[in-house]
Length: 243
Image 1 (cartoon, one colour):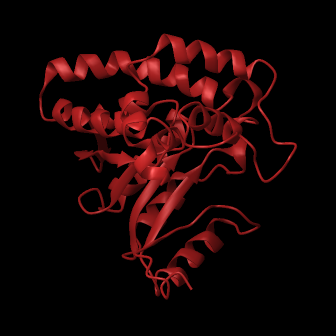
Image 2 (spheres, rainbow, N blue to C red):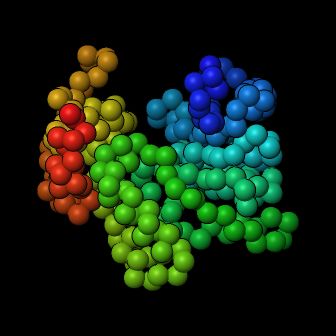
């Protein structure tokens, strides 16, 4: 169905009862129809822990063209990096950070993995992030700056390492980290509502609402980090987008 509708590739979530062997076989089967993006999803929102060997086996499939790395865990992130390098795919498989708690550090860090006594470099080329469902204009600017930092711009690097903490703090409020991410969707909706992009923060589940204290946290980060918001850009184009 995805192929018939013109999609270019498929991101496979690690949901379901399949073990690691089953997940690899599923990716292989789907890859016969469309290229595959792997997905390491954090356990707090339905993901599961997957071994370094799994990521090596998945990355070795020619049909796998990318991986969204979103375990919100540095150790598990390293498992993906090591798996990709062990499979020899560090040069042609695109890694996207999904670690909303560590976005900018992922994008600027020089990841050097030791494989068979050889140093192999691998990098994140971008982000597939819930965080970037809001303040998207700023996200474009930050990604451009991350590319300059990786190319040797020390001023950009120092600025982004500072902003990494700001963005993580903002993300904690938007995604409701204090309450196990219960309010992540209404948190995103609330930011979009404030910009006029949504009429409210309602979800399909009427019981899915902001957690206690989350609204105050959103107020705080809204005041604290105006340099992360893209309110002026949205306001400039809002009538055009909603017409």
